[in-house]
Image 1 (cartoon, rainbow, N blue to C red):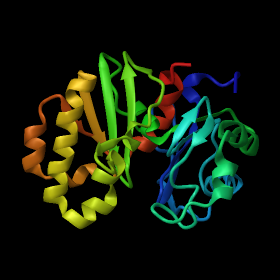
Image 2: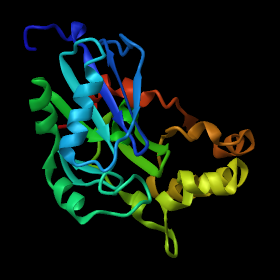
Image 3: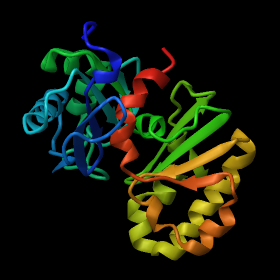
Image 4: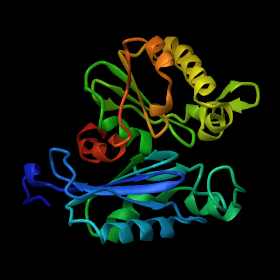
Length: 257
């Protein structure tokens, strides 16, 4: 890869979610070289099966020079500290399997992906990759992704801060942020009431982070009602879910390590 100019590098970018895995190959400018491929996330999902799935998806895409993977959970230096969905029997909100908890704990996903592809690899939390695709690189920028649960990433001057899984913290007694604005509650409440919950989360976090810009992404960000969007403030921007793949290129320069 050292012989290839950075302007000619192609990146296989993979966005691993609780319900689906999307991937494409992008050029150095972040332009897709092929339509994105999406497959349902298979369960149960030990680490080896996820790596095999990524290799199978890549077989239908153009060749790349490096790989970026975004996945849910606490990822430190490419190593999985904990992941919420992939330790379950059949996906989000199903039974947790102790053997999968053990299999994923301290699993070096970055090394496994690099070995499987024979390419340099970068593995981050999925919200962090999403954020890499949208941040301006100036000031304090917070990214929240609304999907199965709530993802987050924080950037200061374009540098990625250490990941915090504060989405698991209680927003009220017995209810985490994940549960409060996750997909199950959106389906139960409807977009109107759910959107008002999103606004309460934004208003509650504003004095905690005092951001210069907040980006709302993820598959459910487009379901926020226009009435709520109008009240969120000029410092809040809704961004496309495609950033989860497009960010796979920029993540290499914004990872801060």
